[in-house]
Image 1: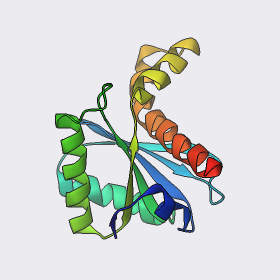
Image 2: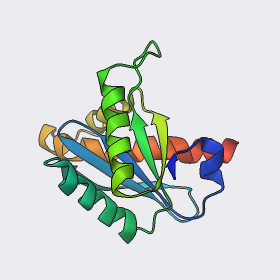
Image 3: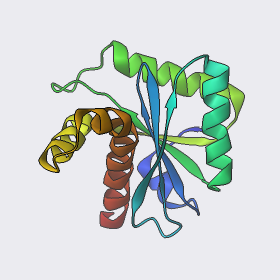
Image 4: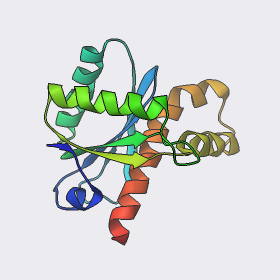
Length: 151
């Protein structure tokens, strides 16, 4: 399949799996079948690429996802830095493992927004650390779900 556009995503049927790719973890979230709500699922601690993608694709299959929505860390000025290239490389290598539809979503400030929400909820530092990545994935995925309803 490869990288797809938002309009392509609209024509696929089924839940979407959201991914917040970090250097140390992969945060995962899933939408419901009707694509109204994103729910945090899991945080995978990164090790080797093959093991990371095996765990990711297992959840993709378990949740019967039809596409992967990946947080794309564009710089605040709209430029692309080393992190955006790292995400692109991750997606390219993932597509070599399995040909699935992947949509890149601008994730600027998602982790910051989620962290602020957890602080406002008086969540402990320890709980914030263990939840931030899957909640960021949920925030990213919810942004796509909301956008799909507007188009």
